[in-house]
Image 1 (cartoon, rainbow, N blue to C red):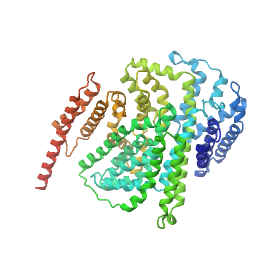
Image 2: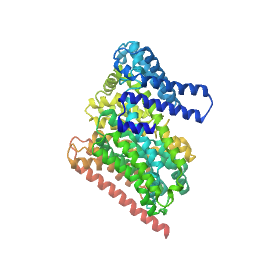
Image 3: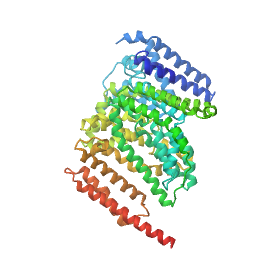
Image 4: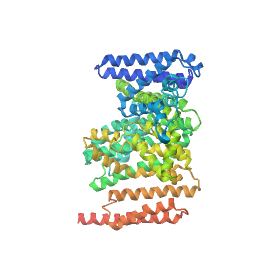
Length: 614
């Protein structure tokens, strides 16, 4: 499948629609083979799923040219097999992610059939049943249903960049990440917790999966944190919060940037530029959290031994593919072309790096193969989700629900942008429970981003806002997938891990609000560069102060008068952003308040240390 995808990226062997059919066919075949390999229980049913997937794919591939020439009329055979394809992706998605999303797809299909009977403004226009059946899967040359435009996100972008992350890991990129993280963490008292934040940031931008990131980096950071004195719940929470942030960190953003670019038509570089500062602030806040937590626990720095020579040898495996990716994108090459060369450069540099000494003779080729296979399996699971998502989006678009629901929410909000933003955040968090970030983002964006744009929000901000909340859903209970996996790895209690993870990432939940009211954070300097920089500084002041208030710690425990000063540095930046006539005096006073609080706290800490020594 990887070879086929790479060939298509360069040669464009046939039409995109036909490529989507083959891509989904490969994904179904691989997922069913993996299911058979893991367990032979129910093998006749599994074998029938495998055969059905192959049969449907062969039919639509071989008959594509004939079906593509048909416009209004689609043969009954194509309609029946399209329904079979919809059932296959529903079952595959159920097996990979649970029942929530297939149920949502079933509701969407049901709404296309019976939405005409729904009373009130949500009533759908009557649509002939034959049209609905065609939209579900039989119209392979169109843009609706299982084989529709949403599947293109996986076929063209998502698959390749998930596989890119697995190649990066398989050929040694993780060694550089771990070594670089060790160097930085040895300078900070939070030690292994800081290592978790740094390595998760570097790796998370490539893997595109919170869970994959947790399992890779958490395997060594969680035991290290527990050994250093962190509670199991704290260790799991820190790893979950840090790993989750990788999805918003450029340049790859866990493939979220590519999904948004393909879905909205907004240039990739514009999305990356807009996400850079928010991502850095998020990781800065998580790092501040672990530093404050380590201070409360009385931890000290722990020197780490790093072989600088090995670090320099391993660096190209991570940096060269990243550089290839960025240079080609900046030069304007397509995402598919860029992804091909990023993967190829990763393989070439990884093999060249292993040639030194006798390293290539000791190379664990089985582990390399398994890592790439695991990445491909993850990418295939995203392919079937995108196929099923096509049904949901088709139901929303063909019935006009997106426009109607957006208008209903706008009416409920009474034209109030803050209230509509709350609706958008809640919808993204709820839809994201147990589902991939891309799914939660697309569902929210289809319905609510147009409503935000209607109220004057720029398109980029209107899509980044739900994306960030779709990312955070992996930390918010009751179905916080990231916190669940991390708590299991740490041997911790789930709900307490969720609570700690929200402490670490809570202030980050405020960042998307600045996309709307402080566009400088997205490097959109509408009011001038000085105003944009002041908006960035305002959220930094507010976020740092709020984190210290929540932790009740700076260099030592904070006193009430210090909390008062920190509160001033939270409130004054808000005045600056939301005031009709913003004054830079708010920012200056807020910065002075924060500096005064930190200075007073540090002086008291020094005195306490001297008294303890005395």
